[in-house]
Length: 114
Image (cartoon, rainbow, N blue to C red; front, side):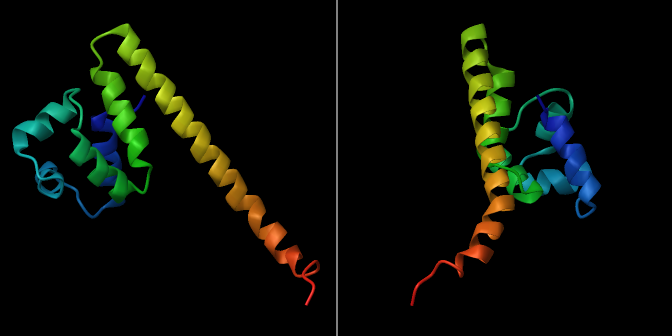
């Protein structure tokens, strides 16, 4: 599972936001929150959505990862880990379809009757 600290580093790799201050400003949080993220804390849902949009990833996946990490019971952790697996599988299926769909569309003109 990826941590908030991992995602902060990914944001920095993109180059537009290179300092903790600039990332905190983008997320609408203070420096203390950024320090918490880097020391193992988790994004709240709003920050998770902002990070997901910026990194072009599924926000539900990021929110599920953060909830799995902050879960207080094994049952809750298991629930969120299952959601992560479902979301990841769904994304993989959509990606697979996006690779094959153009083949079907390009051949469809052969079967259209006017």
